[in-house]
Image (tube, rainbow, N blue to C red; front, side):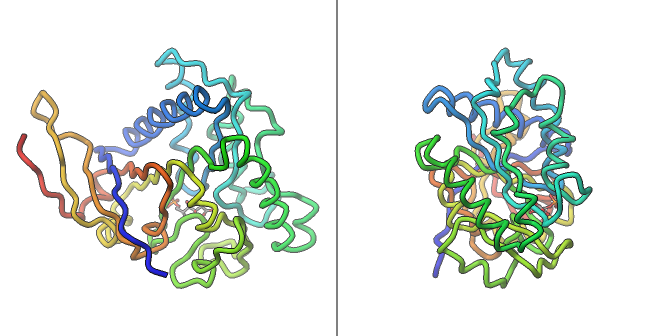
Length: 276
Ligand code: 6PG
């Protein structure tokens, strides 16, 4: 199956902290719109370096004078390792530490969807099936599509637990799949499939550090800095075509694809600047 190029917005910042700030600003906007339009905010979140970028989210809502309306949130996992949520490898635990358990973050625990402990004793297949039931019960709440997926990208080009050249890349039958041979430890995981990621309105990738640069350079083509700020400093916004050269480049949301990255990650990506 050939995946066409997609247009993306790429926001570049000098530091990881600035990447986190921009991510939080964008989440505030998307959340507010989703709740205004459909009455809920449905979001899938990754593990890896992403949870730490969310720690300023409550403060960002406060600074902007916007009520997060946490009772209307539904939080899913983009992928999860095959461990209980108390284990240090758990993505849910990482999200709890950085955001979900922060004081004032009052998302009802029934709206935070972790993997099922009982199925974990059975098989990853059972865990994936159970998680798919959860996902499919959430989707109709926000009009059949997830409002937002927050994704990372590995140095090998994986996203969620969708790894380069893995048979799961062809999996279009199910929304959630087990993986027993993840090259990134631990090997047993579940992951949203491309079928689920396609049922998402907006996707934001975050990538920081020079190690991400070779992969970004392979998926980001025709990159243009489109406008200048009034003060003459370069705009953080670059528009680009994304190629499906790696799993992270294969994600095609319905409405909007965004990358928020630091300058180290962009080092090897050629960007043309248009004078305004
Ligand atoms: C996981 C993550 C995974 C992550 C990427 C990027 O369970 O390992 O959910 O998909 O997003 O591996 O990780 P970094 O952001 O740490 O590079």
